[in-house]
Length: 258
Image (cartoon, rainbow, N blue to C red; front, side, top):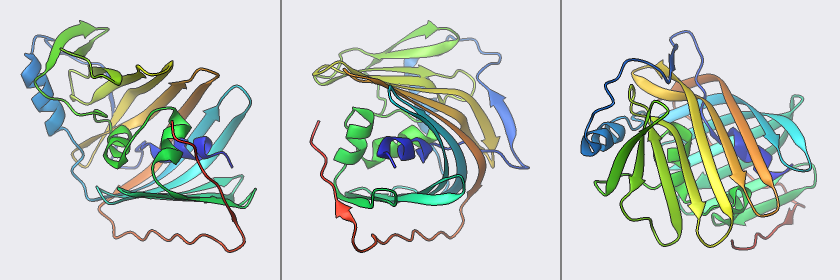
């Protein structure tokens, strides 16, 4: 099981009885000051303690295309856990904490136990735990402060840093209705690598605006990876368990640094 395919299930799509669809359209004056936009975006951050969700994921690269079902559990700021299955059969598990990434897959009987190089190589961009969690809940990967300038692009507030960082160029498109992200783009200045994350639709669930659909496009020098995610169910603030044990006899794999 390719780690990149399993990673696709990391994103939340919410759909259950109390859900109400919120599209990225509506009435907005589009004349808010930059600091107000940033303040509202930061206020919209996810506030629940836990998430449990089931996700339909489609993965595609230059060599393969595959659908995977994912069970996702998150303890905010502490752990991200998921179990992947194909045609109803469990095939892999992942457990991520702020300092550790663990993963095993049953087809080739391999495992990984180490740092975030596994996730970074899957997407071609270095990410830490907080950035990965932000990606899943529709928040900015690198954070927002007053050092941005505003313009309007296709019905979104486009925020661009006054001065781009040495390693990354970043762009944020903020929805003028819920102040979550419509999309965000992170480009590496060291190599031809671009990570584009799009949030075309949100659901309003238990006072939270949450991504209903997330599309990730990771452009790398030799290929382009596309991950489309759709959440089929979600619950907040449950008491969750995060079972994870690497089976005996599995072969450890190593991941080169980016």
